[in-house]
Amino acid sequence: MTTKLRIDVSQGLIDIEGDPELVREIYADFKIHLLSGVKFAQPAPPAPPAAPSGADINEQTPPAPKLRAKRRSTAKKKTNGDESGSGVLADSPKLDKNLDTSGLGSFYGQFAPKNNAEKILIFLKFMTESLHIESPNTDQVYTCFRATGNKIPKAFAQAFYDTSSKLGYIDFRSSTDLPITIAGDNHFNHTMKRKAAE
Image (cartoon, rainbow, N blue to C red; front, side, top):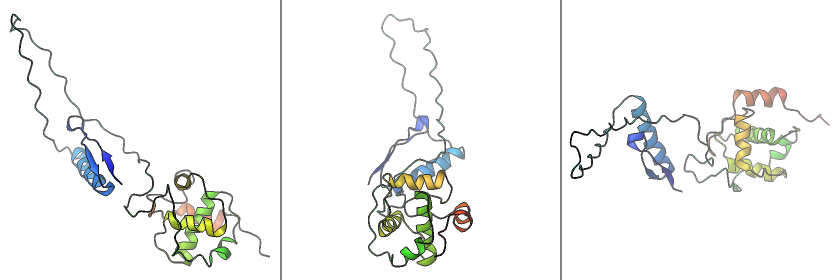
């Protein structure tokens, strides 16, 4: 996958095309220099056009406008969920055949989730607590949806963005970095509806 970034020095921008990790690294370095006040070499202003014959040499051309670097907001850019170059894409999940889902049915069966956010939280808790997977990924969550027979969210990556930004249960940084937050722990342990013991 190739990523493009355009930055024009006169406006605080530069053109970069390549691996997402490389582009991110160059942009971060550029941003640090820009914010620390390091001055970048400004391109030489274009030479004034030659005065046409018969023109008054004393006529002054208007001064060139001063160039200022554009400041960009530091808001998070929405990605397809693959920041790590791992090949795991939240937009197009794949079945993880190596994931042990044998205990998932009984773990999941304790709860009565109301929405996809709660299902994602349950699946992440199962993988971190029962399977001791340190950093579950979106392919593994997709595998859990399939293993439990749940309907898979149509906009799969959006389900993670919503679980993160709207409800705060996880911190969706990338498709391989989605830790459960304190709000998610609290919801799982104290608020989420559990099925009555039979």
